[in-house]
Image (cartoon, rainbow, N blue to C red):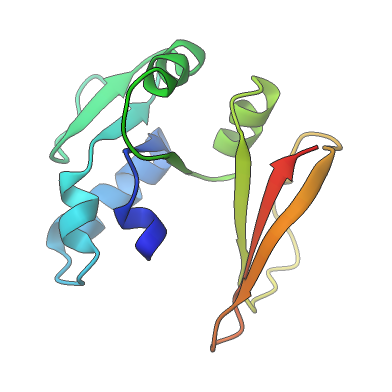
Length: 139
């Protein structure tokens, strides 16, 4: 949770934006205030505007992330599914991967990465309910 509040900007794909915006705007959880106040960069070729406070829509992910990386502030934290992660990885826009593994098995789904990646483990953290957070950096 501390990571979410330390973000300089939250980068989200269109699908995650559609799920996250209504949730955080209605939430009374302590992390909701920073999630609503911290700037959000929404990456979509179809969305024209965003109603979540502090949100801007960017049609070009490569140019948008490059612009965000030039700004001062905390880290850019990307939220999204496999397609968004694959796009960020394919365009070589990710400096660090923070992957949470929850104790649930669906049995099928999308690959997180489109192909092999050379990564090195930087940190792990285990939570009481069985979730394990892995932090990887590019090798």
